[in-house]
Image 1 (cartoon, rainbow, N blue to C red):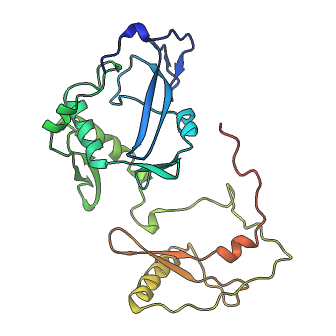
Image 2: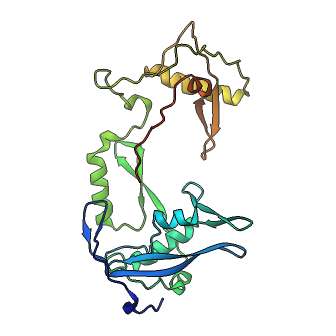
Length: 275
């Protein structure tokens, strides 16, 4: 970026990371940031803290900047939208480009170097056309069906350490319904806070195509066999199944609890004010 360090303003307040580590910033600088393209873009002045820590990130926008843009971020859609004059602007993320950028940073050793105010050279990104992939490794040699996926750029020593760690804690993996033993009622019991004055709702039976019926029967059989659910002969509440297509092409079996949710009083303060 070619910014003179003399433009940095001194900052005395340290930064604290997630692990509780304390970092002293080298200073603060105000830079204009433009998001969006063409007529659907917004520009604002953002205060950045420059720190000398190992990182693959060039800049990080905090909540004050996102709030100033009135931006809405969706990690699932890799998109950020914000209001602009006469419409809505957006920034679309690119997972392939992010992986390529990370690969260049790791290969050039920037993970172990200090983070500076200089941006990553776009020519470095143009030279690198590889995309890091995941490799499938069996977690148990006796059972090849139990596998984990590791980053392909890990060397043999790192892969061995990661596999050893995962194998030492393989008891936390749930490969099937039978592996989920549940929580003893003596420790915790979940109950529905249903309003007693609310009349129970029995939804009308919905019809499905044969493939969906087969998916429902398979899922219900799994839950019955492991004791997660039990049959009720005279239910007060009846809710239909809802099937959602997975990315693998299989069906995810859900339950329509919209009527039951309406009968449960709402908590006006479900979470503390984290801000």
